[in-house]
Each structure stands twice: as C-alpha cells, then as structure tokens.
Image (cartoon, rainbow, N blue to C red; front, side, top):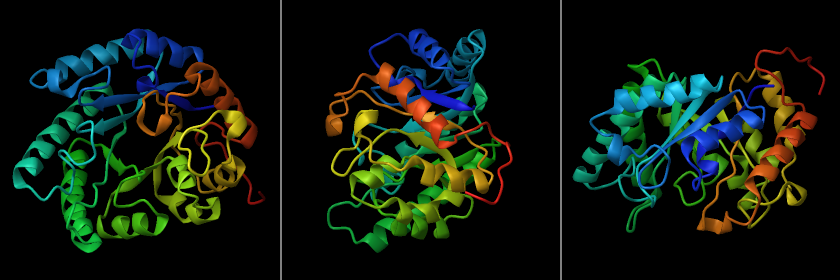
Length: 288
C-alpha cells in the first residue's frame, strides 16, 4: 500500500508529531503543506533560507522512514491574494516569487511534484478572461517546475474557476504538461456525480482523499457518499502511479473542524484498502 498523509491535517501539533502520526497511520510518505500563515513550514519565514528549510524537513522525514509525496503550495489564506490568474501585475509578481520558493522547497525535500491552486473568477471577470490568465500563469509555472524536474498539478476546488469537471478539462487542454491533484470531495460537495468525475482520472498526478457528501466538503467515513471503488478500479486499470493521499483538514472553513482527524484518517485508509487501493505498479486485469 502506498498511502501518504497530509502534515497540515494536524496544524495544532508540532511538525514532528504530525509526521509521527503519518507514520503511525502506516503511510509511506507525507503531503507537505507550504502555505502562507498556516502550515508548519511557513513560506513567509522560510524565504531566503529555502534550501536550509527543505534540508531540515528532509531530515525529519528520513528519521521516520518517510518520503515526500507532494508539496501543496498555497500562496495565501484567501483564494484571491497572489492567485495564479490575478489581474494585478504586482500580485502576479508576488505570486511567481512565492511559486519559485515552493519549487525550490519541493526539489529540496525530494518530492516528485507540487500542487497549487488554479485561480478564481474575479469581480467583473468573464470566465473566458479568467481562464486565459490562468492558462498563461500556469504555463509559466509548469516550465518553472519542469526546470527542477518536478511535475505540477492544480487542485480543482470549491470556489475556483474550475469547479466542474468540464471547466477543469478546458484548462488542462490549454496548458500542456499541467495535471491535477484530485480531491473528489470538492466535486461531490457540489453534487457532481462520480461518473462525471471519471474523465479526469487520466489527468490525475496525485490524489487527496477524504469523505464528502452533497453540501458537505468533509464528513466522517460513516457519512461518506463517495463511491471509492468506482474511482479506484479505473485508476488502477489506467496504471495510476501516484499516492493515495489521506487529506483531512482541521479548519473552520466549510465546517472542516467537525471530525476526529486521527480516527477518521485510519478509517479512510481502511476503506480505501477495501476499495482496492494498492501499491503503485501492481498490475490489475481488464475486469473490474
């Protein structure tokens, strides 16, 4: 089994303790948060010392037998500030500076790639203009990541300009090399049926898994409405090589502070195992 777990699931604990929990959950790797003002590793304080910071994190991972599965780079605590498609050139400049730091951090930790946000629809924007700016900004970021041997993906999320599978595919078509970090709960929250999510699976570089339900972004496993076998089976058949990331968060946004993140992470891990989530590279037959 190749599970990863997000360190930012436990923001109130020291970083080492969060990594210890990931190991206790039998995860092989960790999704590292690189999020301004809220993750264990703070971009705003690491600036100017990114190689040192990455080295410290790498030592923490090595001491626990963990790998870096992904770096989740979020520029700020709202979706607009430093967005990849921000209409203000100064915000774009700041956003690219943040992203360069994120790339250097990811490379230093040994992560295979990083995740960022796709951008939003700004006041007075048309979807077409917002999408065009996002495509331009993300194309540049794909190049910056590739120069360090890293893959880049965006998370289609609630409140983004790609909050439906159709909009997500439209962006991917415009940005060669861009992939997605798929958290099905964001679509299920918006009552998107799982069959409509399936066309996105070939574009998935990384998975962020948590239980969800219509109108509820994060729920307990016993309340989960996501049909995980219908996602796991085609991913296996397509040769998905990434991690199965356990990604509960603990924050007030969208009432995502209502579950026991330790117990529910263990329950979700077991549910994914029951659904057929297996080690990368394990062959699977043509039959479902």
